[in-house]
Amino acid sequence: MVGQPLAPVIVVGGHKGGIGRTVTAVNLAAMLALSGRRTLLLDLDPKGDATAALGLPREEGRRVPEDLSDPEQLLAACRPAPCPPGLDVWPGGQALEGLQAQLWKDEDPPVDLLQRGLELARRRYRAILIDSLPALDPLGCNGVSVADYLVLPLSGQAFSAQAHVESLQAAERLCSRRLRIVGVCIGVRPEEVLGGKRPLMPPSSRGSMVLESAIAYDAHTLLQAADRGLPVFEHAPGSRVARSFLELGREVIAKLVDAPVPVG
Image (cartoon, rainbow, N blue to C red):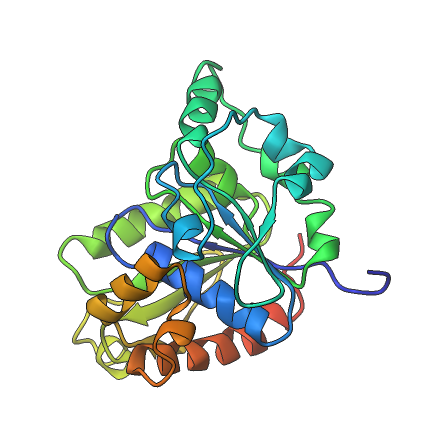
């Protein structure tokens, strides 16, 4: 839209798997759309769990690099989620395995595909979220390199501190843009993290902050919601985890989505 600021690109990532990356990306994207801000979620995982968690079929066709780099092709591949209105998904799934293989054939795989491919999407949407791979393979690198904000779920699990350090180092190496690192506590209260009872997010030369909101992790409720292909607030609106995502969404809107996008 004319006069609309460019949508910020919020990448939910981290070098360690099993820390709530996909859960955070799916439910945060749904909350942003629920607020009336048209949102795009890119699922860069060949497992396609984020896609399935929003009630859409995993992508099983053929993907080529142009699906990421060509702005028109990228938008044409997006599908509206059943709910909430205003949430579109670029589906992940098995098709991305073939794309990964194609990119690995290059001696120096390109990491700037999405920088070109999101050109139109950043004008069409109010927020863009990317469910990025924990490993820095070509798809993961493309996701991180286009980020305005890198959101790291802080779970306090064993070895997660070293994984956060590796994630930050990779982001600073890949992203030539101005990048902010954003921590979100998952499964623990934020005062526990800020009080030193859990590992703190490592400092970054790009600037970092830990959000005040925390995700009340409830594996059973989240699994049931994903199995039904629903955001958690649609599956269990009165649950603690749904309320925590509502609070998180409000803070992300205020500090990331409606705030000026970092430039440079």
